[in-house]
Amino acid sequence: MSEILSKEESKKVLTKIEDDLYKPIKTYDDWSIAWLVLLLTIVAVGFYAWTHQLKVGLGVTALRDYVSWGMYIGNFVFFVAVSLIGMLISSVLQLLGYKWITPITRIAEQVAIAAVALAGLIIVMDMGRPDRVLNVLKNGRFASPILWDVTVITTYLAISVLLIFLPLIPDIAMMHKRLKGIPKWQENIYKVLSLNWVGSDEQYSLLKTAIRILLILIIPVALSIHTVTSWLFAATLRPGWDSTIFGPYFVTGAFVAGVAAVLIVMFAYQRRYKLHEYITDKHFDLVCKLLVLTSLVYLYFNINEFLVPAYKMRKLEGAHITELFKGKFAVLFYMVQIGGLILPIILLLFKKMRKPIPAFIIALVVLIAAWFKRFLIVVPTMMHPTLPIQNVPDNFHTYMPTGTEILVASFSWGAAILIITLLAKLFPVIPVWEIAEEKGVKREDLYE
Image 1 (cartoon, rainbow, N blue to C red):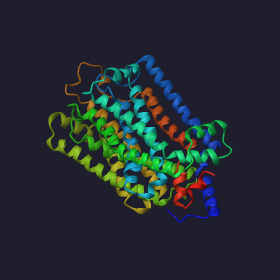
Image 2 (cartoon, rainbow, N blue to C red):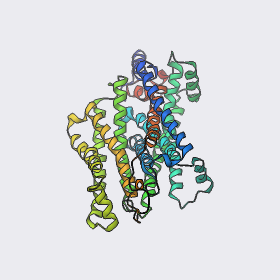
Image 3 (cartoon, rainbow, N blue to C red):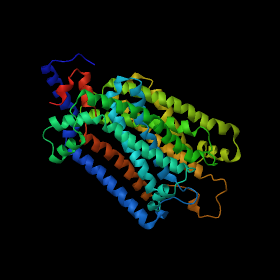
Image 4 (tube, rainbow, N blue to C red):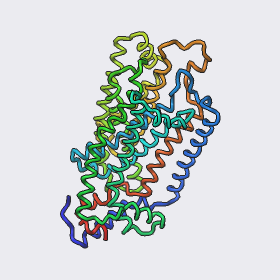
Protein backbone atom coordinates (compact mmCIF):
# COMPACT_ATOMS: atom_id res chain seq x y z
CA MET A 1 0.00 0.00 0.00
CA SER A 2 1.18 3.56 -0.74
CA GLU A 3 1.64 6.19 1.97
CA ILE A 4 -1.60 7.49 3.48
CA LEU A 5 -2.53 10.70 1.71
CA SER A 6 -3.69 13.97 3.19
CA LYS A 7 -7.41 14.79 3.12
CA GLU A 8 -7.09 17.00 0.06
CA GLU A 9 -4.83 14.58 -1.83
CA SER A 10 -7.09 11.69 -0.90
CA LYS A 11 -10.13 13.41 -2.42
CA LYS A 12 -8.27 14.19 -5.65
CA VAL A 13 -6.98 10.63 -6.04
CA LEU A 14 -10.39 9.11 -5.23
CA THR A 15 -12.16 11.43 -7.69
CA LYS A 16 -9.70 10.44 -10.42
CA ILE A 17 -10.17 6.70 -9.68
CA GLU A 18 -13.95 7.03 -9.69
CA ASP A 19 -13.97 9.01 -12.94
CA ASP A 20 -11.91 6.27 -14.56
CA LEU A 21 -13.51 3.15 -13.11
CA TYR A 22 -17.14 4.26 -13.24
CA LYS A 23 -16.77 4.94 -16.95
CA PRO A 24 -18.27 1.57 -18.04
CA ILE A 25 -21.33 2.25 -15.85
CA LYS A 26 -21.88 5.78 -17.16
CA THR A 27 -21.09 5.10 -20.84
CA TYR A 28 -24.31 4.86 -22.87
CA ASP A 29 -23.28 5.94 -26.36
CA ASP A 30 -24.37 4.60 -29.75
CA TRP A 31 -21.75 1.84 -29.61
CA SER A 32 -23.07 0.60 -26.26
CA ILE A 33 -26.65 0.52 -27.52
CA ALA A 34 -25.66 -1.18 -30.78
CA TRP A 35 -23.68 -3.81 -28.86
CA LEU A 36 -26.61 -4.57 -26.54
CA VAL A 37 -29.02 -4.75 -29.48
CA LEU A 38 -26.70 -7.18 -31.29
CA LEU A 39 -26.38 -9.46 -28.24
CA LEU A 40 -30.12 -9.37 -27.53
CA THR A 41 -30.81 -10.24 -31.19
CA ILE A 42 -28.45 -13.23 -31.04
CA VAL A 43 -30.08 -14.40 -27.81
CA ALA A 44 -33.60 -13.91 -29.19
CA VAL A 45 -32.88 -15.78 -32.44
CA GLY A 46 -31.19 -18.60 -30.53
CA PHE A 47 -34.10 -18.83 -28.09
CA TYR A 48 -36.57 -18.96 -30.97
CA ALA A 49 -34.56 -21.80 -32.54
CA TRP A 50 -34.76 -23.68 -29.24
CA THR A 51 -38.54 -23.23 -29.01
CA HIS A 52 -38.74 -24.58 -32.58
CA GLN A 53 -36.66 -27.57 -31.48
CA LEU A 54 -39.03 -28.14 -28.55
CA LYS A 55 -42.07 -28.11 -30.85
CA VAL A 56 -40.65 -30.27 -33.65
CA GLY A 57 -38.28 -32.46 -31.65
CA LEU A 58 -34.57 -33.21 -31.77
CA GLY A 59 -35.06 -34.43 -35.32
CA VAL A 60 -34.32 -30.85 -36.47
CA THR A 61 -30.76 -31.39 -35.24
CA ALA A 62 -28.13 -33.78 -36.58
CA LEU A 63 -28.25 -35.78 -33.33
CA ARG A 64 -29.04 -39.42 -34.02
CA ASP A 65 -28.70 -42.83 -32.38
CA TYR A 66 -24.92 -42.79 -32.61
CA VAL A 67 -23.88 -39.14 -32.26
CA SER A 68 -26.43 -38.34 -29.59
CA TRP A 69 -24.48 -35.53 -27.90
CA GLY A 70 -22.70 -33.63 -30.65
CA MET A 71 -22.35 -29.86 -30.67
CA TYR A 72 -24.47 -29.22 -27.58
CA ILE A 73 -22.40 -31.30 -25.18
CA GLY A 74 -19.16 -30.05 -26.73
CA ASN A 75 -20.47 -26.56 -26.00
CA PHE A 76 -21.34 -27.58 -22.45
CA VAL A 77 -17.83 -28.92 -21.79
CA PHE A 78 -16.37 -25.71 -23.25
CA PHE A 79 -18.34 -23.45 -20.89
CA VAL A 80 -17.53 -25.62 -17.88
CA ALA A 81 -13.87 -25.32 -18.87
CA VAL A 82 -13.93 -21.53 -19.19
CA SER A 83 -15.64 -21.19 -15.79
CA LEU A 84 -12.59 -22.59 -13.95
CA ILE A 85 -10.65 -19.36 -14.50
CA GLY A 86 -12.47 -17.77 -11.56
CA MET A 87 -10.81 -20.27 -9.26
CA LEU A 88 -7.33 -19.97 -10.81
CA ILE A 89 -7.04 -16.17 -10.81
CA SER A 90 -9.39 -15.04 -8.05
CA SER A 91 -8.57 -17.81 -5.61
CA VAL A 92 -5.23 -19.54 -6.15
CA LEU A 93 -3.20 -16.48 -7.20
CA GLN A 94 -4.87 -14.28 -4.59
CA LEU A 95 -4.18 -16.78 -1.79
CA LEU A 96 -0.56 -16.95 -2.95
CA GLY A 97 -0.34 -13.20 -2.39
CA TYR A 98 0.09 -11.91 -5.95
CA LYS A 99 -1.02 -8.26 -5.73
CA TRP A 100 -0.83 -7.62 -9.49
CA ILE A 101 -4.02 -9.61 -10.05
CA THR A 102 -6.21 -7.07 -8.15
CA PRO A 103 -7.44 -5.26 -11.31
CA ILE A 104 -8.38 -8.52 -13.06
CA THR A 105 -9.93 -10.62 -10.29
CA ARG A 106 -13.40 -9.25 -10.94
CA ILE A 107 -12.99 -9.77 -14.68
CA ALA A 108 -12.13 -13.43 -14.04
CA GLU A 109 -15.20 -13.81 -11.82
CA GLN A 110 -17.46 -12.21 -14.44
CA VAL A 111 -16.21 -14.73 -17.00
CA ALA A 112 -16.63 -17.60 -14.53
CA ILE A 113 -20.22 -16.69 -13.59
CA ALA A 114 -21.30 -16.22 -17.21
CA ALA A 115 -19.71 -19.51 -18.25
CA VAL A 116 -20.99 -21.71 -15.43
CA ALA A 117 -24.52 -20.25 -15.66
CA LEU A 118 -24.69 -21.10 -19.37
CA ALA A 119 -23.13 -24.51 -18.83
CA GLY A 120 -26.13 -25.49 -16.71
CA LEU A 121 -28.58 -24.04 -19.22
CA ILE A 122 -26.98 -25.82 -22.18
CA ILE A 123 -27.78 -29.21 -20.64
CA VAL A 124 -31.46 -28.25 -20.52
CA MET A 125 -31.36 -27.08 -24.15
CA ASP A 126 -29.82 -30.41 -25.17
CA MET A 127 -32.82 -32.31 -23.83
CA GLY A 128 -35.80 -33.22 -25.97
CA ARG A 129 -37.90 -33.12 -22.79
CA PRO A 130 -36.39 -30.39 -20.58
CA ASP A 131 -39.14 -30.90 -18.00
CA ARG A 132 -37.44 -34.17 -17.15
CA VAL A 133 -34.46 -32.32 -15.70
CA LEU A 134 -36.46 -32.35 -12.43
CA ASN A 135 -36.02 -36.13 -12.37
CA VAL A 136 -32.37 -35.56 -11.50
CA LEU A 137 -33.49 -33.91 -8.28
CA LYS A 138 -36.44 -36.22 -7.56
CA ASN A 139 -34.93 -39.54 -8.57
CA GLY A 140 -31.19 -38.89 -8.64
CA ARG A 141 -28.91 -41.80 -7.83
CA PHE A 142 -25.58 -41.29 -6.08
CA ALA A 143 -24.01 -43.77 -8.51
CA SER A 144 -24.80 -41.46 -11.45
CA PRO A 145 -22.04 -39.02 -12.54
CA ILE A 146 -24.83 -36.78 -13.91
CA LEU A 147 -26.06 -36.15 -10.35
CA TRP A 148 -22.50 -35.30 -9.30
CA ASP A 149 -22.21 -32.88 -12.20
CA VAL A 150 -25.47 -31.09 -11.37
CA THR A 151 -24.40 -30.81 -7.72
CA VAL A 152 -20.93 -29.35 -8.33
CA ILE A 153 -22.13 -26.95 -11.06
CA THR A 154 -24.83 -25.56 -8.77
CA THR A 155 -22.40 -25.27 -5.85
CA TYR A 156 -19.72 -23.62 -7.99
CA LEU A 157 -22.21 -21.09 -9.35
CA ALA A 158 -23.38 -20.23 -5.83
CA ILE A 159 -19.83 -19.73 -4.52
CA SER A 160 -18.82 -17.74 -7.62
CA VAL A 161 -21.78 -15.39 -7.15
CA LEU A 162 -20.82 -14.88 -3.51
CA LEU A 163 -17.17 -14.40 -4.47
CA ILE A 164 -18.00 -11.60 -6.88
CA PHE A 165 -20.70 -10.05 -4.66
CA LEU A 166 -18.87 -9.83 -1.32
CA PRO A 167 -15.89 -7.77 -2.61
CA LEU A 168 -18.46 -5.62 -4.45
CA ILE A 169 -20.25 -4.53 -1.26
CA PRO A 170 -17.85 -1.63 -0.45
CA ASP A 171 -17.99 -0.49 -4.09
CA ILE A 172 -21.79 -0.66 -4.11
CA ALA A 173 -21.95 1.39 -0.90
CA MET A 174 -19.61 3.96 -2.47
CA MET A 175 -21.74 4.15 -5.61
CA HIS A 176 -24.91 4.56 -3.55
CA LYS A 177 -23.38 7.56 -1.76
CA ARG A 178 -21.22 9.12 -4.46
CA LEU A 179 -22.36 8.13 -7.96
CA LYS A 180 -24.57 10.83 -9.44
CA GLY A 181 -26.66 11.08 -12.58
CA ILE A 182 -27.85 7.48 -12.67
CA PRO A 183 -31.47 6.29 -13.00
CA LYS A 184 -33.58 5.94 -9.85
CA TRP A 185 -33.97 2.18 -10.30
CA GLN A 186 -30.19 1.84 -10.35
CA GLU A 187 -29.89 3.89 -7.16
CA ASN A 188 -32.42 1.59 -5.49
CA ILE A 189 -30.47 -1.49 -6.56
CA TYR A 190 -27.29 -0.07 -5.03
CA LYS A 191 -29.14 0.86 -1.84
CA VAL A 192 -30.46 -2.68 -1.37
CA LEU A 193 -27.23 -4.45 -2.32
CA SER A 194 -25.01 -2.23 -0.14
CA LEU A 195 -26.45 -4.06 2.92
CA ASN A 196 -26.05 -0.96 5.13
CA TRP A 197 -22.29 -0.98 4.61
CA VAL A 198 -20.58 1.96 6.37
CA GLY A 199 -16.95 0.86 6.08
CA SER A 200 -16.22 0.19 9.75
CA ASP A 201 -13.17 -1.84 10.77
CA GLU A 202 -15.45 -4.59 12.04
CA GLN A 203 -17.22 -4.83 8.67
CA TYR A 204 -13.93 -4.94 6.77
CA SER A 205 -12.57 -7.65 9.08
CA LEU A 206 -15.72 -9.75 8.66
CA LEU A 207 -15.69 -9.21 4.89
CA LYS A 208 -12.08 -10.27 4.47
CA THR A 209 -12.61 -13.37 6.61
CA ALA A 210 -15.67 -14.39 4.56
CA ILE A 211 -13.83 -13.81 1.28
CA ARG A 212 -10.86 -15.88 2.43
CA ILE A 213 -13.14 -18.77 3.40
CA LEU A 214 -14.77 -18.65 -0.05
CA LEU A 215 -11.36 -18.48 -1.77
CA ILE A 216 -10.41 -21.71 -0.04
CA LEU A 217 -13.78 -23.43 -0.54
CA ILE A 218 -13.94 -22.72 -4.26
CA ILE A 219 -10.71 -24.61 -5.03
CA PRO A 220 -11.97 -28.17 -4.42
CA VAL A 221 -15.38 -27.31 -5.88
CA ALA A 222 -13.83 -25.87 -9.05
CA LEU A 223 -11.51 -28.85 -9.48
CA SER A 224 -14.51 -31.13 -8.93
CA ILE A 225 -16.70 -29.43 -11.53
CA HIS A 226 -14.46 -30.28 -14.47
CA THR A 227 -13.15 -33.53 -13.03
CA VAL A 228 -16.72 -34.80 -12.66
CA THR A 229 -17.50 -33.56 -16.19
CA SER A 230 -14.56 -35.61 -17.45
CA TRP A 231 -15.92 -38.65 -15.61
CA LEU A 232 -19.12 -38.44 -17.67
CA PHE A 233 -16.87 -39.52 -20.53
CA ALA A 234 -14.19 -41.58 -18.78
CA ALA A 235 -16.68 -43.75 -16.88
CA THR A 236 -17.65 -45.35 -20.21
CA LEU A 237 -15.75 -48.00 -22.19
CA ARG A 238 -15.84 -46.03 -25.44
CA PRO A 239 -12.52 -45.76 -27.31
CA GLY A 240 -11.25 -42.21 -27.02
CA TRP A 241 -12.92 -41.70 -23.63
CA ASP A 242 -11.75 -44.78 -21.74
CA SER A 243 -8.83 -42.95 -20.10
CA THR A 244 -7.51 -42.64 -16.55
CA ILE A 245 -6.08 -39.13 -17.11
CA PHE A 246 -9.27 -37.39 -18.26
CA GLY A 247 -9.62 -35.55 -14.93
CA PRO A 248 -6.32 -33.59 -15.01
CA TYR A 249 -6.51 -33.51 -18.82
CA PHE A 250 -9.81 -31.63 -18.68
CA VAL A 251 -8.74 -29.37 -15.80
CA THR A 252 -5.50 -28.20 -17.46
CA GLY A 253 -7.36 -27.63 -20.73
CA ALA A 254 -9.91 -25.60 -18.78
CA PHE A 255 -7.20 -23.30 -17.45
CA VAL A 256 -5.98 -22.66 -21.02
CA ALA A 257 -9.48 -21.75 -22.25
CA GLY A 258 -10.21 -19.64 -19.18
CA VAL A 259 -6.99 -17.63 -19.33
CA ALA A 260 -7.61 -16.93 -23.02
CA ALA A 261 -11.16 -15.73 -22.24
CA VAL A 262 -9.88 -13.37 -19.53
CA LEU A 263 -7.26 -11.93 -21.89
CA ILE A 264 -9.98 -11.16 -24.44
CA VAL A 265 -12.22 -9.42 -21.87
CA MET A 266 -9.22 -7.54 -20.44
CA PHE A 267 -8.42 -6.18 -23.89
CA ALA A 268 -12.04 -5.22 -24.55
CA TYR A 269 -12.34 -3.32 -21.25
CA GLN A 270 -8.95 -1.64 -21.60
CA ARG A 271 -9.64 -0.32 -25.11
CA ARG A 272 -13.36 0.40 -24.80
CA TYR A 273 -13.22 2.24 -21.46
CA LYS A 274 -9.64 3.62 -21.61
CA LEU A 275 -8.44 1.68 -18.57
CA HIS A 276 -4.78 1.62 -19.64
CA GLU A 277 -3.66 2.97 -16.27
CA TYR A 278 -5.25 0.04 -14.42
CA ILE A 279 -5.03 -2.82 -16.94
CA THR A 280 -1.46 -2.26 -18.08
CA ASP A 281 0.97 -3.93 -20.45
CA LYS A 282 2.44 -5.61 -17.37
CA HIS A 283 -0.88 -7.35 -16.70
CA PHE A 284 -1.04 -8.63 -20.28
CA ASP A 285 2.57 -9.79 -20.02
CA LEU A 286 1.94 -11.73 -16.81
CA VAL A 287 -1.38 -13.24 -17.91
CA CYS A 288 0.25 -14.31 -21.19
CA LYS A 289 2.98 -16.03 -19.18
CA LEU A 290 0.24 -17.77 -17.22
CA LEU A 291 -1.27 -18.88 -20.54
CA VAL A 292 2.10 -20.30 -21.62
CA LEU A 293 2.45 -22.19 -18.34
CA THR A 294 -1.03 -23.72 -18.49
CA SER A 295 -0.59 -24.52 -22.19
CA LEU A 296 2.67 -26.36 -21.56
CA VAL A 297 1.00 -28.51 -18.90
CA TYR A 298 -1.95 -29.12 -21.24
CA LEU A 299 0.42 -30.02 -24.08
CA TYR A 300 1.97 -32.68 -21.88
CA PHE A 301 -1.45 -34.23 -21.21
CA ASN A 302 -2.30 -34.09 -24.92
CA ILE A 303 0.87 -35.97 -25.79
CA ASN A 304 0.13 -38.52 -23.09
CA GLU A 305 -3.51 -38.84 -24.18
CA PHE A 306 -2.67 -39.70 -27.79
CA LEU A 307 0.79 -41.30 -27.59
CA VAL A 308 -0.21 -44.25 -25.40
CA PRO A 309 -3.18 -45.52 -27.51
CA ALA A 310 -1.27 -44.72 -30.72
CA TYR A 311 1.63 -46.87 -29.51
CA LYS A 312 -0.64 -49.86 -28.81
CA MET A 313 -3.11 -49.30 -31.69
CA ARG A 314 -5.67 -51.77 -30.37
CA LYS A 315 -8.48 -52.30 -32.83
CA LEU A 316 -11.09 -49.81 -31.59
CA GLU A 317 -8.60 -47.29 -30.16
CA GLY A 318 -6.63 -47.58 -33.38
CA ALA A 319 -9.70 -46.71 -35.47
CA HIS A 320 -10.30 -43.63 -33.31
CA ILE A 321 -6.66 -42.48 -33.50
CA THR A 322 -6.55 -43.06 -37.26
CA GLU A 323 -9.70 -40.98 -37.71
CA LEU A 324 -8.09 -38.09 -35.84
CA PHE A 325 -4.63 -38.33 -37.38
CA LYS A 326 -5.48 -39.29 -40.97
CA GLY A 327 -9.27 -39.41 -41.35
CA LYS A 328 -11.97 -36.83 -41.94
CA PHE A 329 -11.27 -35.07 -38.62
CA ALA A 330 -7.52 -34.76 -39.28
CA VAL A 331 -7.53 -31.18 -40.62
CA LEU A 332 -9.53 -29.90 -37.66
CA PHE A 333 -7.39 -31.94 -35.26
CA TYR A 334 -4.10 -30.47 -36.50
CA MET A 335 -5.52 -26.95 -36.62
CA VAL A 336 -6.56 -27.28 -32.98
CA GLN A 337 -3.30 -28.82 -31.79
CA ILE A 338 -0.91 -26.64 -33.76
CA GLY A 339 -2.86 -23.40 -34.11
CA GLY A 340 -4.51 -23.46 -30.70
CA LEU A 341 -1.71 -24.87 -28.56
CA ILE A 342 1.78 -25.23 -30.05
CA LEU A 343 2.01 -21.96 -32.00
CA PRO A 344 0.61 -19.82 -29.14
CA ILE A 345 3.22 -21.29 -26.78
CA ILE A 346 6.02 -20.43 -29.22
CA LEU A 347 4.72 -16.95 -30.05
CA LEU A 348 4.11 -15.96 -26.43
CA LEU A 349 7.74 -16.73 -25.55
CA PHE A 350 8.57 -13.44 -27.30
CA LYS A 351 7.88 -10.31 -25.29
CA LYS A 352 6.45 -8.41 -28.28
CA MET A 353 3.73 -11.03 -28.58
CA ARG A 354 2.69 -10.40 -24.96
CA LYS A 355 1.59 -6.84 -25.75
CA PRO A 356 -2.19 -6.16 -25.70
CA ILE A 357 -3.02 -6.40 -29.43
CA PRO A 358 -1.03 -9.57 -30.31
CA ALA A 359 -2.06 -11.11 -26.97
CA PHE A 360 -5.73 -10.46 -27.81
CA ILE A 361 -5.40 -12.07 -31.26
CA ILE A 362 -3.56 -15.10 -29.88
CA ALA A 363 -6.10 -15.49 -27.04
CA LEU A 364 -8.98 -15.30 -29.53
CA VAL A 365 -7.42 -18.09 -31.63
CA VAL A 366 -6.76 -20.18 -28.50
CA LEU A 367 -10.36 -19.78 -27.31
CA ILE A 368 -11.84 -20.73 -30.70
CA ALA A 369 -9.49 -23.73 -30.86
CA ALA A 370 -10.56 -24.67 -27.33
CA TRP A 371 -14.18 -24.86 -28.48
CA PHE A 372 -13.31 -27.07 -31.45
CA LYS A 373 -11.17 -29.22 -29.14
CA ARG A 374 -14.30 -30.05 -27.14
CA PHE A 375 -16.12 -30.82 -30.37
CA LEU A 376 -13.31 -33.29 -31.21
CA ILE A 377 -13.57 -34.90 -27.79
CA VAL A 378 -17.28 -35.61 -28.25
CA VAL A 379 -18.02 -36.35 -31.91
CA PRO A 380 -15.24 -38.63 -33.30
CA THR A 381 -15.58 -41.00 -30.35
CA MET A 382 -19.33 -41.33 -30.90
CA MET A 383 -18.66 -42.06 -34.57
CA HIS A 384 -16.75 -45.19 -33.48
CA PRO A 385 -19.09 -47.20 -31.26
CA THR A 386 -18.19 -50.68 -30.05
CA LEU A 387 -20.62 -52.17 -32.55
CA PRO A 388 -20.36 -51.23 -36.24
CA ILE A 389 -22.79 -48.70 -37.71
CA GLN A 390 -24.96 -50.76 -40.05
CA ASN A 391 -28.52 -51.07 -41.34
CA VAL A 392 -29.23 -47.38 -40.65
CA PRO A 393 -29.82 -44.37 -42.94
CA ASP A 394 -26.76 -42.75 -44.55
CA ASN A 395 -26.99 -39.60 -42.43
CA PHE A 396 -26.36 -41.72 -39.31
CA HIS A 397 -22.81 -42.34 -40.57
CA THR A 398 -21.79 -38.70 -40.37
CA TYR A 399 -22.42 -35.71 -38.17
CA MET A 400 -22.67 -32.08 -39.23
CA PRO A 401 -24.53 -29.60 -36.98
CA THR A 402 -27.72 -28.24 -38.51
CA GLY A 403 -28.69 -24.58 -38.63
CA THR A 404 -30.96 -25.11 -35.63
CA GLU A 405 -28.08 -26.48 -33.56
CA ILE A 406 -25.83 -23.59 -34.52
CA LEU A 407 -28.51 -21.03 -33.63
CA VAL A 408 -29.26 -22.71 -30.30
CA ALA A 409 -25.53 -22.80 -29.53
CA SER A 410 -25.28 -19.12 -30.53
CA PHE A 411 -27.84 -18.40 -27.79
CA SER A 412 -25.32 -19.59 -25.20
CA TRP A 413 -22.47 -17.56 -26.68
CA GLY A 414 -24.58 -14.41 -26.91
CA ALA A 415 -26.07 -14.91 -23.44
CA ALA A 416 -22.64 -15.40 -21.83
CA ILE A 417 -21.30 -12.19 -23.40
CA LEU A 418 -24.54 -10.40 -22.46
CA ILE A 419 -24.11 -11.39 -18.80
CA ILE A 420 -20.56 -10.03 -18.79
CA THR A 421 -21.73 -6.83 -20.51
CA LEU A 422 -24.58 -6.24 -18.04
CA LEU A 423 -22.31 -6.86 -15.06
CA ALA A 424 -19.92 -4.23 -16.45
CA LYS A 425 -22.83 -1.81 -16.86
CA LEU A 426 -23.98 -2.23 -13.27
CA PHE A 427 -20.77 -2.66 -11.28
CA PRO A 428 -17.14 -1.52 -11.62
CA VAL A 429 -15.04 -4.04 -13.54
CA ILE A 430 -12.07 -3.17 -11.32
CA PRO A 431 -12.40 -2.99 -7.49
CA VAL A 432 -12.53 0.75 -6.73
CA TRP A 433 -12.04 0.45 -2.96
CA GLU A 434 -9.03 -1.86 -3.29
CA ILE A 435 -7.34 0.35 -5.89
CA ALA A 436 -8.06 3.41 -3.74
CA GLU A 437 -6.55 1.80 -0.66
CA GLU A 438 -3.47 0.76 -2.65
CA LYS A 439 -3.01 4.39 -3.68
CA GLY A 440 -3.21 5.61 -0.09
CA VAL A 441 -6.83 6.80 0.19
CA LYS A 442 -8.18 6.60 3.74
CA ARG A 443 -11.13 4.29 4.30
CA GLU A 444 -13.23 7.00 5.90
CA ASP A 445 -12.89 9.10 2.75
CA LEU A 446 -14.46 6.39 0.62
CA TYR A 447 -17.99 6.79 1.98
CA GLU A 448 -18.34 10.54 2.46
